Image (cartoon, rainbow, N blue to C red):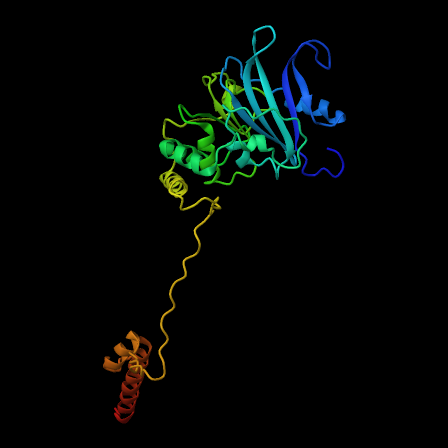
Length: 332
């Protein structure tokens, strides 16, 4: 970006051209408000995402982030000059504070913004006119409550490094993203509303897939969420997802609640203190069991074995002395 252009939003249009800057023909830049020294860099960053997925005839949007910059792609299938299937993609490149996740979700893929050149100091008015407001997205989301609960339940467990491939059926991905972004923290989300391949490099975090789940080991690295089939999650996770989705759909909560890792400690009520005006009954002290037994035990003296031996010794000694005395008195 040019020095001082902190909030500048540039516009780049990709389309089939017979003369690419690097030679040959194909999908390339046909219009750009970027400074010349930045065009090559952003072309390399976006070359894998500016094309409509192969075999897909529906428009789509894609939201990417590169450091403090964000890119919002509006991809439309068209016919090239040789009447072949091609793509016209208009990209907004600007600060994340301007190209927010909410604005990326609100952009309607089936309504292409008016032709605009830029650069802009804020979000282009032509793109704002091709977007849906919160009230419309909320009303559309009420018809997909079960799928939104399944998506939120999966996201409550965290997003793996490979991201998720999501099968949404007939639900508008933007509607599901709108609900989910208000139920779980979404500061770092990137997404694509339509991708036929989930194994390509550089895919966003959340990809709404139109193709079949690959069977190769490489393709299986990105977990799949089929929103038509409730996930076998823990009952508490499903209950939490249900509460959050219902709060958003009923309007009770339009803000992102912070997840609580643990329940707050319960404060036990303190016992009411006795005042001086309330006399307390005297406490009766009971004697210990041993003291009670001793108090009622009769005290009788019984000689021990050693004392009994001494007594017998003295008795025999006395008898022996008496016999000696009698023997001395008897004379022949």
